[in-house]
Amino acid sequence: MDAAHGRIEFREIDEHGNALEHHLGAVEVPQRRAAVNPFIIGLWVLELALVIGIMVIINEAMAPLTPTPGNTMPFPFILMNMTPQLLQATALILATLLFWHAWQWQKRKAQK
View (tube, rainbow, N blue to C red):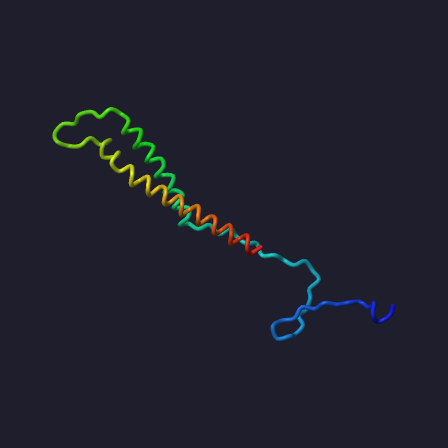
């Protein structure tokens, strides 16, 4: 072999230009624990509770309103009046969760 076809070696250097030692053994990759955000889990639980609550409210509101003694409002009527605000809260939480998951997915995809 002549000098032009000799063996080429690559060495990694640090930020100061010093050569780093190579270890030919298996490189251990640290196991990354799945980081679960407890606030996101809480939001999913709240979302589920709101959806179930709205279904119960609508079910109760469909029941015939029975007269109550005195001048009190029937409970299903009060629940039905709360439904629009609960629907808005549910939609807002769901949209927030979807955007958060999309942002996390995009961040993981950019790291690869």
